[in-house]
Length: 199
Image (tube, rainbow, N blue to C red; front, top):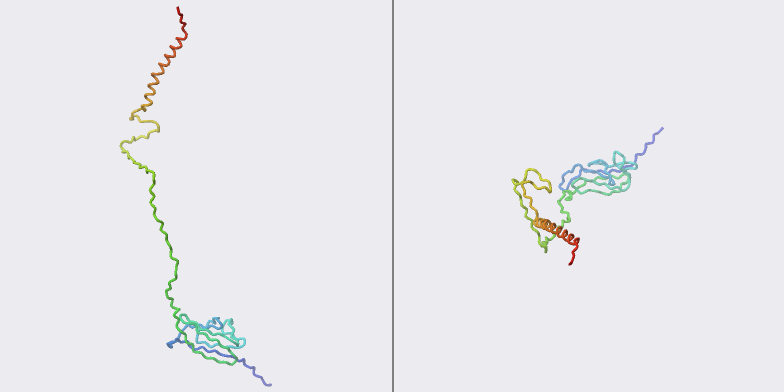
């Protein structure tokens, strides 16, 4: 009984060596992306392609034969990428060089802002055509103020009771004229009641 060997599946490899900058310095923490999907690996890395192969441990990024985009990413540097058509039995070795990105160092940019426009209203001095009354406040000395509160309409005993002159004279005229009027009326009545006999 002879055993027939099982045919091994043909694979293709894509080997990524250490990444350097243009000065030849080796860069660390360079991330590997396949078809814009992060495979959670850093360089150096060797990718294997076959029917039913995956490039990541979680088996989320398929690495079958065909066209693939391999991209490398590092903060402060421009991304490195390459598009390859992977066939069975192919073997690739790459030595990427990444270029420092000036855009990685943020430069202060002046963003135009809308300047606040302030309008100053003119001050208009208006002089009225009518006279402005002027009030003079007189402050009474606290010594002349009575310590007891006064009832409205009631004069204190210390003030003199004076009547206006018009009221005084009109009252005097009334008391003089009223008796004369009464006497005149009584005399007139008495005169009419008497009978005059002419001889």
